[in-house]
Image 1 (tube, rainbow, N blue to C red):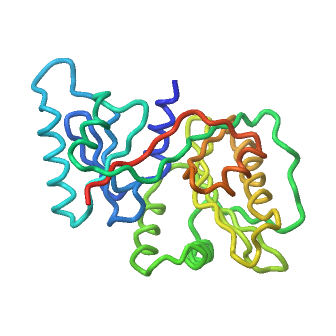
Image 2: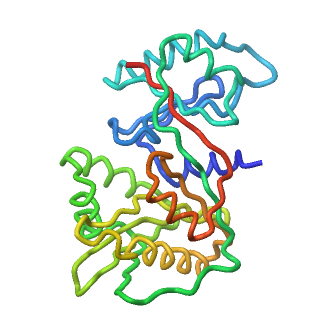
Image 3: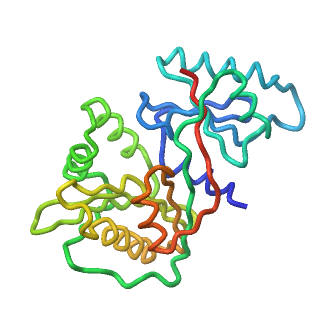
Length: 250
């Protein structure tokens, strides 16, 4: 029932290039994030017409990423096609990486908006937001340029949030709206401001903003190893919808 969220994640977190392979979606973006540089085997071949053998499809996917100088990565969800693909990739030496949780939240009963600090939300990517995120996430110049291209190419409604404490950026994040959902990405707090409720304040601000823009629900993705973020999302009322992981060929 949540396969539509997988489609939303493809749209709200873009890639620089997407190629179709007999129902699979091969995405690439100069290696920046596994989300944008992986095979999404969400669909099978059409009911009529020629269909490739799954082994052939894996080989073609590997060739695609090798030609781009990238590792071959598959995103494994409950909706993969064919259903036994994860076991097949494991048998071929693909290792599991980054087990993650997809969580959803209805926005009908949001906690009240906190206003301890200044929250600024821009409808388009700004140099300030990009500089703050790049610094806090320790991005290289190449990664920063790739992120800028990816986000600037999106035609969806975006909200770039900066939380300022005494005029200094303490946290930042991104909300992207489509089909009544606001997806949250790149939530990060500067090290010197952590454990002060900054991320919670920023997220609530983004969710209230999203609701004013017509969103009725939210989704996000969190790596299971990030227990601090998981605890915060539990506190805010997010519920796990399903889990996914990656299979990576070294």
